[in-house]
Image 1 (tube, rainbow, N blue to C red):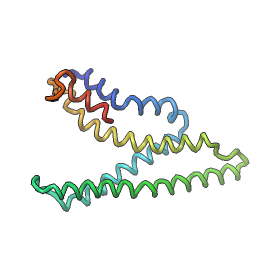
Image 2: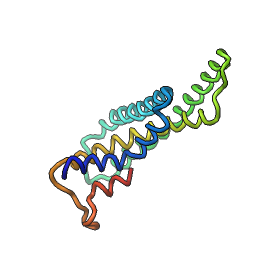
Image 3: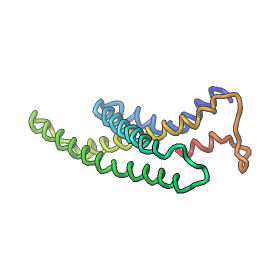
Image 4: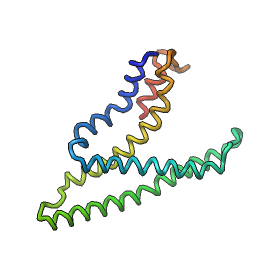
Length: 164
């Protein structure tokens, strides 16, 4: 497979996020910082989880319950971080409103709050998509094409791009 096909698959998977970033997020530097902080929080949670999972390695491929524990801890930890991120986000809104009152500027509008929430969610989703999409698409830049048994007309990478 060519480099052009690999880049095309990456753009299919990351194109909607890229268009949201270019059209809505990149015009306000504060939204870029919100996106980066959300991405950093997601990546830090993965690092913390990998430290926890290190105790379970090497996994026995015949015992499914170890994989269930790993999956449960991943979901529980990520969902536990969401309320923390929400509290930080609400605190940030209060700080920005207080700053606006102090410098006699208008408070945050509803659209501003929605854009901040969009930037936070897009950061989480973008980190997830980049992390899993790039690890999956790395073989797509090689010389061969991988097809699925059940769908021999469409390459595996194209099918997996629509999962993101």
